[in-house]
Amino acid sequence: MQNYSTLILIALMVFAFYFLILRPQKKRQQAVQNTLNSLQPGNRVLLGSGLFGTIVSLGDRQAVLEISPGVELTVLKQAIVRAVTEADEDTVTDEDDLLDDDEVLTDADGLAPRETTSDLGTAPGDRDGSTAVAQDVEWQNPSAGADPKRPS
Image 1 (cartoon, rainbow, N blue to C red):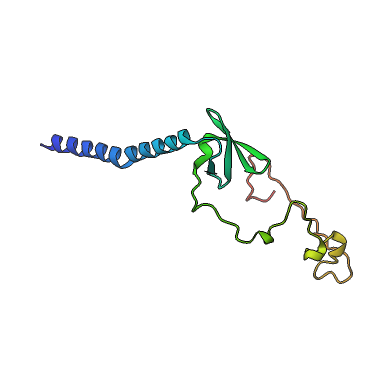
Image 2 (cartoon, rainbow, N blue to C red):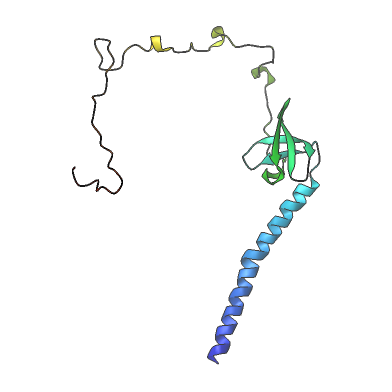
């Protein structure tokens, strides 16, 4: 009787492992494969890294995506997570806030001037304008096999 209960327990564990782990994983893999097979040039997709792109061309293992006008990126098809939905896309509400390609920002537009090393002045605590130099500290690298805790 003891042998049968042990066999039944092992069989239940195998079935539970299959139905709780292997079967759902197989379904996810099948869903991803179906998604990749249904993709066509022109589709917007989301990569695992969070990049959005439009498919330009598809190969057996790679896809060419356009991530910005004129900027193409070649990725493995495995990097494509899914097709983009409307909920994923942010819409720009006010196009006046966007810069045209011909516009160039200037200092008058509110850009702060770039700080150069001559503008930095002295470090805090340096009253005479000199820069502090760290004191030379002797450091000994113990050789291989030496005990670093024991003074030499």
